[in-house]
Image (cartoon, rainbow, N blue to C red; front, side, top):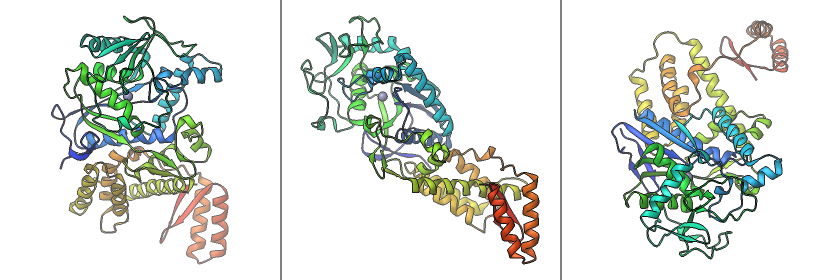
Length: 462
Ligand SMILES: [Zn+2]
C-alpha cells in the first residue's frame, strides 16, 4: 500500500514517490519569533508531525528542516510590512535579539508539550546570512534581479511563477504599492534602504549594509541543508499564494529553471467559533499557555487536531476542547486498563488484521486521521478481539497519533484511597448502596474517580 498526499502544485491526490528510494527530504516554514505561537499555527506544525509519522509508518527515512524567522521585518506577506520584532522589543523593553531568543525557546517548549518530533535541524535566518547572500548573487549573475532605490528586487518578468495559484488576486492587500517595482509581483531580495528607522539587524553584503527579504530565507536555507530538488515542502495555507510562490520563483530561477519541490502540502486555518480565523496580527489569539490556564493539557489539543482533516478548516471552541480532553482521558484509561489485564506477547492475530488494514488505508489516503481515530475506538470496543491484540494495535496506531502510550504510567493512587475503594466495593457487593454512594463521594472529593466494573472497579485520578 502506498501513501497518497494532496499536492497543492497539481491540486490532486498523488501517490508519494521520493526522489531517492526510501528517503524523504522535507522543509517546513517555521515561526516568526516576535510573539507566542497561536494554536492555529500549531495546527500546521502538528500536520507536519503527522505527515512525518505517516512517512515513517511507511518505512521512509525522513530528513526534516524547519526555519526560525528571527528577523522580525521578514514576517509580512509583502516587503512593506511592519517590523514586528522591533514593535515587540519596544513594547517589552528588550532588544530584538532578546525577543527572538525568548520566543524561539517558547516555541520549542510548545513543540515538546505537544509531542511534536523535533526536526533534524532548526535553521535560524540570522545564522545563515551567507547562504542568503550567495543565492541572491546567483540570481543576480543570471540576470533575475534589478536594483531600485537601494534595494535589490527579484524580476518576475524574467521568471514568473504562480504554480500554487492565487498570486494575482491580492487586490485587497493592505500593503501599499511599491513605486520602485517594475512588475506588480516583484519582491525584494535585499534591503539596504530600510523603511524602518531603528532597524537593528543588519549585515554587510555586496549591495551594501542591510538585511535580506523574507522569501529568500527559506529558499536559501532549504538549499543549504537539504540540497535541491526536495521532496516535500509544508506550511500554512496563509503562506501559499505569496511566500511559497515567491520561494518557487527564486529557487527555480537559481536552479536553471528546474523544478524545486515535488510535493507542496498546506494546512488549513483554525477558526475560533466565536471570533473567526485566528491570526497573530489581531493580538487576540489562543496560545498553549492559555489552554493550560483553562484546565487543558497541550495533548488535548493534539487529540482535537486528529478530529479534522488537515485540509479542512478546524472549528475551535471550548466545548470541542472539553470533548477532546475527555476522549483522550478515555483513550489513556482504556489503554492502561487493557495493559493491566494483559500478559504475554503483543502480536496481532487475524482478527485484528482487518482493522490494521483499515487504519493503514485511512492514513495513506492523504492522512485521514478522523477515520483512523474512529477505527481506533472500534478496536477498543470490539469484544471479539483479545486484549493483547488490542494493545498491539493501539501501540501501532500511536506511532501516528503520537501520544506516547508505550510509556504511559498509571496514575499513582494513594493507599488510603485504595482502602476506601475496597471498603466501597464490599458495600456495593452487599447491596449497601447508601454506604457505597457515600464513599464514592468521599473519593471524588479527594480528587479521584471510581468507575464500576462488574465485580470490581477502576480507580483514576480526576
Ligand atoms: Zn518559508
